[in-house]
Image (cartoon, rainbow, N blue to C red; front, side, top):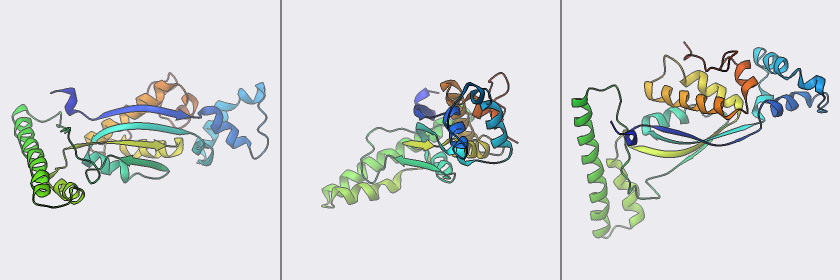
Length: 221
């Protein structure tokens, strides 16, 4: 199967990290940073996480660009605690590029039937839009109504921004053995990218998202 038919995650920016989380916690006493306090950052973050003092972990941002099937997009929207998101819309734009997701664990024969169905639906979308315009309907209304032909399997691109607290909430919920395979894989890709960016090693460790060697954990049970 082509990589074009897989969901994709890109980390496009971060702000803050372990230090901004620590300084936020120290605001209640003193934000002056000394060598002695720097040495206590790991212990501080662990204590905050263990005692569910989550506010300091809101003082950062993690920004992704995600291309995903509609079902997974809905799963992201349902996890919107401290999350900002916006996506491309078939109401405001014509989806000229036919992007769709194909389940990777389906037998090849089922994948072929599914792809044929998607391609037929997308063809109907494009042709119906043009027929509606030719009938005299305003293009704006034609776009927003022709999209009813679009199935769950098509992909939309969205930018999604978390703070670290909301990121942990999302990972705990969606990087789970109980989550649907597609959203679990998206959550795993997110966790890998955040771990690799190097801004949050101690925060990730404090919440048990990586082990002492910096390796990401297995899915939550």
